[in-house]
Image 1: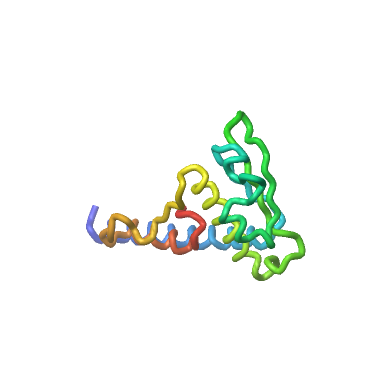
Image 2: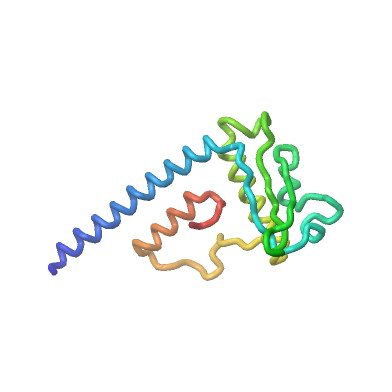
Length: 154
């Protein structure tokens, strides 16, 4: 296969991945707008007393306490505690600001899980291993990280 043909296939593949990623992002944005009442749930491998001593919310969720509802229940199979949270109905964090509020809620749930299970919030930025070489796949990962806006890498 000639070098020109390989380059054409590579560019077509990258373009296809870009279009698919853009369409997926549009679907996610539409889903967030339509789904603000849904409970977000995370399973934490600890008891409720370890997660919320004395009934207090974990620190990341406590910062959003005036805008969210939180429920705790035993996880199936004795695997810890399920922490469920959703935006308060009728709060100012809904509507146009809802997408940002949902990002904050999801981040708070993830951080509460990390604090309870690991003892600290793990961060990927700045990268602890320094800069990586510029590659096509690296650029796609960087774009996905930027698009995630703190909601997890992929």
